[in-house]
Length: 441
Image (cartoon, rainbow, N blue to C red):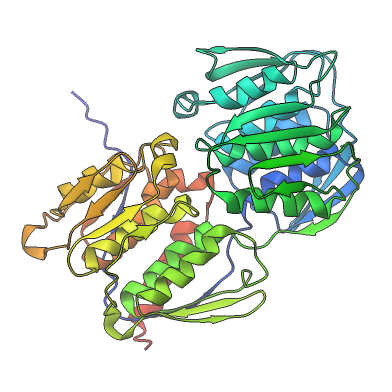
């Protein structure tokens, strides 16, 4: 019998401080929004330094299938917007693992009178879209979906559009971003009423900021109501800044090892909520030098962290919560991280999977519906050489690389899943070992 050995990445300890400068990939969140906004503009836009990864390539291919001409060179994409007009006839789109692309394109599809069918790989099929689909039906769309929630989903736009929807705020900010982006093209515009508290507000801020770059304004009534009047998107030349979620891994590495990381294309001009991860590292004893477009972080000497005694609420930056989970085992006592409700419906369950892996590594964990409590790492209870599944989740792979750099001797299965958002991650990660070997202090 032949036993197939799954590809794995072995993570070794980083033994010494390091000093490294990195150019982050362009923000995936901003890139996806800019691609869609450019496609809706009436004329040609240029998106410079976009994030190039599986998610954004899926979006680019989908837009091309919808009749949007896109040209590429080494540093930019030129997108010839059609003012909200798309190709005719049935179109089938495959979105891989990209939930953000799926939600944006579900909304975009109601601008077409013909059928648009969206599908993806099994993990994407498992992610719910019910509340967004309910809103699209309120706007007049015809939807066919498994349990009115799951891919594959068929969408047809209406003859007459509604002008108001009500949407639960505690599910996904992507639903709101998708609706906001198509809102100015609806005949009467759109009013969105938020039911309850809106999660992940920084992502809404990103959407509104990018819409403004293309000439459209949004009325935001304290995140409880949004109103967008009928408007026309204007072509724009935009520059995509570095991805703040990607920056979190290197901020954490610098903090844990007393190293220094400079990110060259992300600074105080950003509206990305995950940029606040640097402030969290400062609370742990790191020193951060902020400039408009660059940020340098230096961890505390010897990686000796300053304890945080209160709960850590990460509701506003859920994508980097797994990163902080990998710092928690090196803090004294037990660390409680809250505000994690949306992590249950990501690429995998980002509470349950880290909890299971940390427990296998000998770390005490208490798992709640929307929180996690993580105890201290004890080298005496650590079993080296464990293989950890990533479940097609790029953030599981990258966050456990952070942990592995401190404890060593773990194997991350399917490491290429990082291609979803950060294809260059392992190359950039290895740079820290080479500078560490040189004994930089």
